[in-house]
Image 1: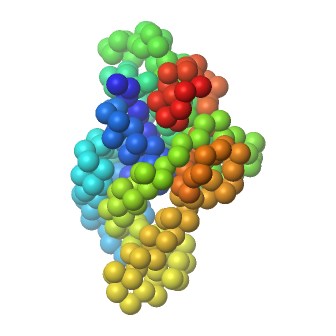
Image 2: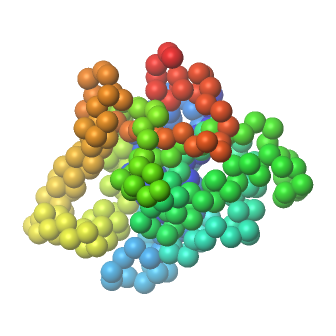
Length: 264
Ligand SMILES: [Zn+2]
């Protein structure tokens, strides 16, 4: 059994970016933890931050339930205010040491959202220090460094995303979409407003809005297969791709086989 720690800046980030892998690993009996660095209390246009903070915490619990018991946690830092500072780095070092993940998945540090950048930077900053005993000496240092993977993105500076690993998610996508839709304040409210999703905004009922969101999510989750067809030699409709970080522990055949479901 392996432990997968998926660290996102916001409560719905990892559901969207690696929820397929999360579902598959959880189903196969591995330990999966979603850690949101912030509480997500900024993504709304009409309710207060405190109301949103409470709602997002409830949404995380509902998503966890729909995923069949994936663990969700948050560092409860205010949304929009995540920085790669030393106190946050120390909190994350302690967290990683306590959970002893085999694999960490996160954002790349080149991303449009400052919280995503900070989150990726924090993971990179922890990658070596989790093994240094005199840093945060109250929690024993790790002797084996976790493998670190980055979720796919479309950013090109300083370098475009590289698909080192591909995961076929056809069997996971329905459950992933259910989990993503549990973040209702985002999917039904903030994201359509912020992104001018007129198809969703103009829906005349919640049912119709959800049907249109489903279509959008299906398109999003099939995009990696269209973008990187060579990474998916088998017939695949929905997939996720990951880039291996060079600061993390070395990728092993065993971890690669668990993630891709294939013998190398
Ligand atoms: Zn985010």
